[in-house]
Length: 216
Image: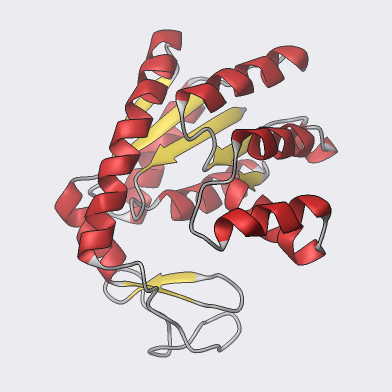
């Protein structure tokens, strides 16, 4: 079971990725997590990655594709995986195709969590994150047990500086522009599934599970 999960920023992709991976026992492979780990380890790659992320720039394909390829060679990916945050454009989708062909494997499912723009803005504006462990909350939909504190480590939660309406709308415009060619790429392969993302967490998860279990 090899899955790609696509969705706009604030569309609930991270929450669904976690649920899917726990349910099916497959690794959650996030390019963001890979980048953060490399930076923390202080590797040559990590130092190069930080020169881009510190400026708010995208990490070049040369680095991103190489790191994803390296991660997919790990033993825990033999029975499947879920990719989150990759591919982000058609060039990366084509590169992933070549990685899969080299492994004599293929991507089985691509899910797009489709959420109306106004709901995305509301979700992101209400998002709070833990700066220490990375756990994410929402003041309305998924509040912490103690207001303003992380359930996992007790650290005070923060409202990210870029979680503002004008910035969110700019990010959505860029996302839509770069993602449409990816959708067309996987639509032509017959593996793209559009999921209605304006419902609750369990409703969205149920739609995904129905498709995955129906293919067994």
